[in-house]
Amino acid sequence: MPNGYNAPMEMLARKLDSVTRLADAERAALLNLPHTVRNLPARHDIARFSERPNQCCLVLQGWVTRYAALTDGDRQILSFYVAGDMPDLQSLHLHHMDHNLATLTAAVIAFIPHDELRPLLRRHPDLASALWRDTLIDAAHYRERITSLGRRQALGRVAHLFCELFLRQQAVGLTTGLSCPLAPKQSELADALGLTSVHLNRVLRTLRQRKLVALSGGVLTIEDWDALTAVAEFDPTFLHQRNNEPAVREAAVPA
Image (cartoon, rainbow, N blue to C red; front, side, top):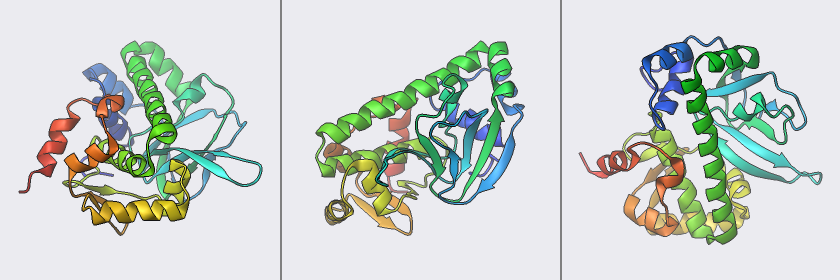
């Protein structure tokens, strides 16, 4: 976790601060929310299709993925989640899982019982609104991803995902300059982007040759933000973050 964000709920508070404003009372209530922290190995199912969860999870460290599994063994990765994300808030109201949720890497996860979260949200309706906003933004991510899968060419599809993952990690302090972690393997990125691994490898080679990105040791470095966003036709509106573009511009300026 980033320095200065050691308390688990502080990570969630920072994430919510990136998309809305928490009043002092809501922040204090959030920081005191009962939870259990667990260290999970990579590729560990957190919740499976058809299960009835009684808790929500908050990613504190590592990566989590939402995916659909087909009977022939194929899968579609639907989303990637990073520190500060609560990928299963919908389980408060949708009682059966209609997808699978799993760690992508070794991860630290805080589990928050529904029986603790529901009364908190009744006492603090503004906090309920903030989490509702976060869930709506997750839905906005899906709309953008459908557009990518349906209409963007492979190069734009990959570039768009890289821009998104960078800005989401920047919001919770996981970036350095224009570099951020990129935990998914090429096969996992291919599953998320509707590409074969061979096609994805060609696209990544093109992005490198154009000096738009560099990939090394699980780290993505965006070498030319303006050019990458042009290739992606990337508009950050769907992230609904506050003041993300100035932060990117500042990161792009050499020290």
